[in-house]
Length: 173
Ligand SMILES: Nc1ncnc2c1ncn2[C@@H]1O[C@H](COP(=O)(O)OP(=O)(O)O)[C@@H](O)[C@H]1O
Ligand SMILES: O=C(O)C1=C[C@@H](OP(=O)(O)O)[C@@H](O)[C@H](O)C1
Ligand SMILES: [Mg+2]
Image (cartoon, rainbow, N blue to C red; front, side):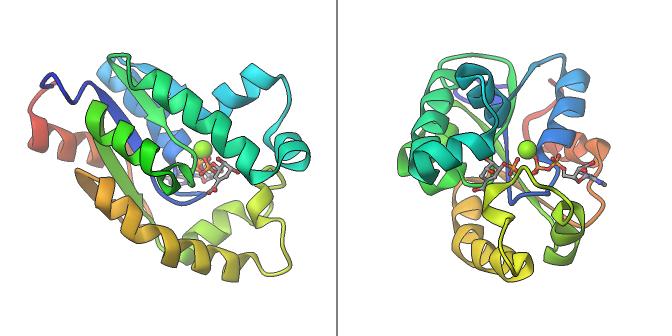
């Protein structure tokens, strides 16, 4: 991959498969895998719900931005970002400057199905998580598209389909 696109970043809403696809993609590319949520948890020693409880979403966003800024200095990383990483302009800038960005664009019913029993996503612990997902989609879809080099759409995105598009875009890794 060319010089200024050193990493691969996956963006998209909660449940899109950034963590799942990211891990498999890293194996296929022989890149290092980093999940920014896991990195924030490893650094703080507590889970995301606790961080949100103590520091609020803003505190979490600061920590997330710090992790992304550090990753932007590295090479050969597949990075699963958190769904809200695109909210901060500095993150959008860092992603675009240091990697190829892939938007996993998954239909809302699938996202809801995949996340409905989950307790680890603080933003979805509300009385109407479907409505929350709709709102987040309305707010963020334009931002995902703004940063993305590639958009992969569908309810059954496979690592192979991502890999094929990636190769079409930038050639064999
Ligand atoms: N491509 C996929 N096909 C089917 N299920 C998936 C796929 N990607 C993720 N999942 C499932 O959806 C849930 C959320 O996936 P995850 O990778 O954590 O999403 P994200 O990191 O984007 O929030 C997990 O239970 C995972 O097993
Ligand atoms: O969409 C969001 O704002 C968030 C998504 C989560 O990551 P996933 O997208 O991997 O679930 C995690 O960063 C946090 O709960 C906030
Ligand atoms: Mg994830």
